[in-house]
Length: 254
Image 1 (cartoon, helix red, strand yellow):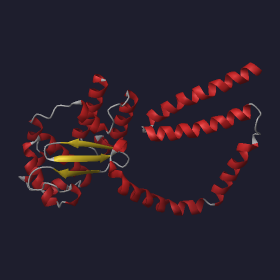
Image 2 (image 1 turned 90 degrees about the vertical axis):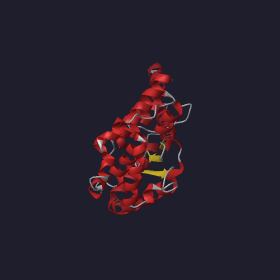
Image 3 (image 1 turned 180 degrees about the vertical axis):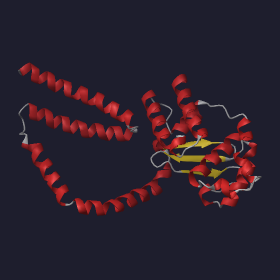
């Protein structure tokens, strides 16, 4: 019985870590989220082991859990009322800090555009790098200006398709605003133009990763982005293709 107890104690951390890794991959957690989850799990495992060893009573956990459950049941109506405030605060926080880059954002640079994508929200924005609207943010441009930019982007397939992806996501009815000539920005002819080949730096930027990214981080970043940018979820075929290509390149070239 004594030996069995210690075998269980040794197995708990191992099984917990394996479970956490699977959970991180399943829900596309970034490294920061995984580390926080690992710290929380470590604390809980330590408490469970102390209970198994008889160092602390079971009531040490049950008492605060029951208090928390009682509090939630008594104040569920208040929590429901506060939910919209929490969502509003979360949205403001994302607006204030989400564009800072790092592991929570990706970027795609083309001849005409420097586009950024926030992983958590799927929001896109970009800066014009060349032409009449150089220096402008897409989010500040009118529909007429965006359509004029699309005409300029006909000279570069990547720029045109990135702009179309932005318009499809931010202005779903943009094609209805263009006449037959302007609407050619979405024509199939543009797809025939050769696209810029990938390199390691570009692939890392697309997935929002650092140069020392592991295979697990590459897979997680790809899955997180595809959850937002898959064509069936409001993304585009072009962005999905770029995200897939970035993952394949990094996994193939190490």
